Amino acid sequence: MSALRRAAARALATIPTRGAVTHGPIKPIGPNFPLTSEKTMGPHGFMRGSYTFFDLKNPIRGPLYRPPWVVGGIHNPTIDPIKHFSTQDRFQTVTFAEYVKCFFYALWPARALFVCVTIPVLWVLLITGIEHRREPMEAFVDREVYWRDPNSWLYGVYFDHHHFSHMLCHRRAHKWGYAGQDITLEGGHHH
Image (cartoon, rainbow, N blue to C red; front, side, top):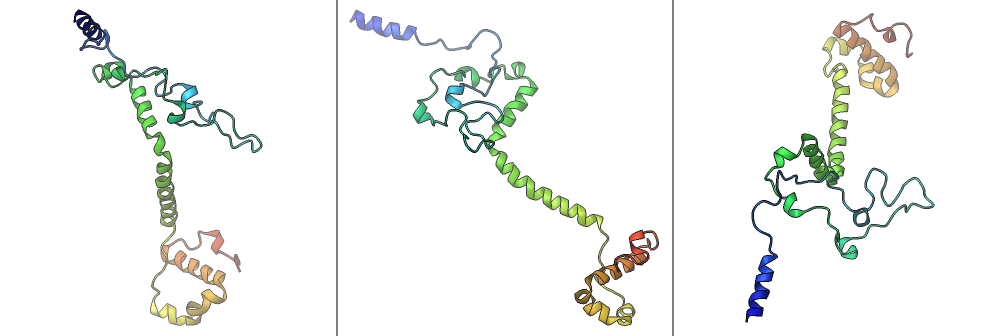
């Protein structure tokens, strides 16, 4: 019976005491967070992966990706979960740059989604900017002007779209007050 009590006491003696994890302020991340073992996770850094696009004969450069159930987990963990999830002294020990680094590391897996959203938005803004720099088209023409040469208005765009476009440019130049200031509209250009 006493052996049983000694065995239970020995097990209880090995349990860590509750309270502070360490003495002094706790820094939840290490200097290379979130990078860890290259053996487990592969090489870190831009263009240091296991594959390359620049060599078609030998594209495999490093160890192939091995999922956790093949590797068997991280045998030498570099992150202490008790320290890492402790928020006790986070604002005193983590700098703003480290906060920003951790924030962008969390967004890193979603970079393709950001590109999928950003490219159409940029195209729309580009086309909108180009269209706003152009002068407005004439949606309506005065009746007298139209009936002065109805065939040019009706069929001009089909028979000679360059001449039709030039005619509209001349009309807009007189309408918006810059006639005589644009050298591309003077003389025999585009005829």
